[in-house]
Length: 403
Image (cartoon, rainbow, N blue to C red; front, side, top):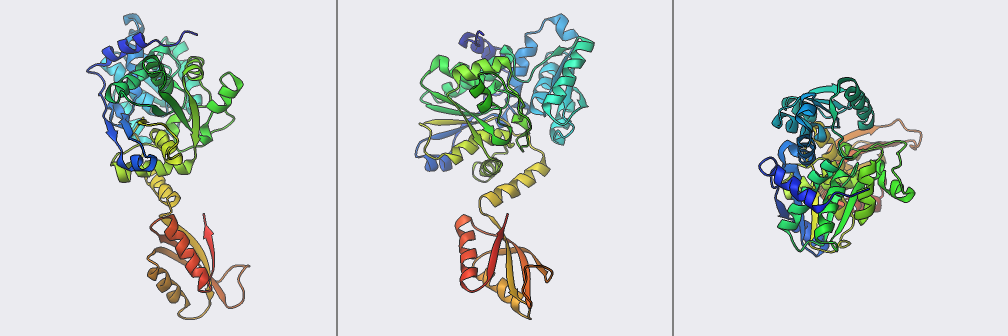
């Protein structure tokens, strides 16, 4: 299969001038200290529609004939591609219909409709929505706009690679979150044509990681199941076009845990002052998981910032827990007046803040005259958590940590 050429990506960049934002490449002091080399963040979360998807969608729809556009376009997406297609179609004067999974985040759903698209909810995953979108295309003659598996889409996403090279010519490693592979394949196509020694690394959520097995098998391989907070990269099987690009051009694929995704999102909020969705923070998660591993300067693509506030709250709590900022304990104390107060005083003296307390006498593991106290504490990090547990045990309490 012929790969997307550098000339095609340059043509896409020229086409997108004035349509997409030339997003900033921000230096990260905290990641630089962690790695001992300059680390930069490519902020596609600040792109129009809140993600990189507008680039590929606009190039793809622009490439249609007037007659094709008159029949409208149809797409399937968890949200970011939906918004990119909706806005691109609006800018190019054609009607967009979008199929989204029933659990699609409400802000993404509302934004897609606000750009003028007709939205239908179908299925539990993007793959199920894709089937319905293709059926709609067959019935109506609308042009199906695949979220990743098309050369025009890959060329559009590849313009991010050109921008990184313009902003940071000395870059040696670029990390990119990947689902279907359109973004990482496009970035690799651009970068390898100009700077072949620059490493391009894809990052997947380990609970939706189709690429490692697909690459091992030498062909796109469907996952049996997926379950991740990173809905934007939860793709069950790569496409044939993206597989050709990733297998040929991408240097490595890494996976990151749900805890790492949460920690990365929290880092973006706390230290970078950037709102990033879990899928958009995948590359950041890999950087946090592997300090010093990547030759620098390093560029990290933050691919999207469209996050449901309710999910954001959940992920922040999860990230705080993963970072050792919360501690849940069960402590046995004597069943007599003053015991609970003495325990809370001790915890306060250790600098932990008690968030809530549950006191119960009902447990088969308790001895006569004992009660168990369940505590949720706010702490200052993993070392502080261990200090609290160790000290309580040293003074005679029976303590167990809860996940």
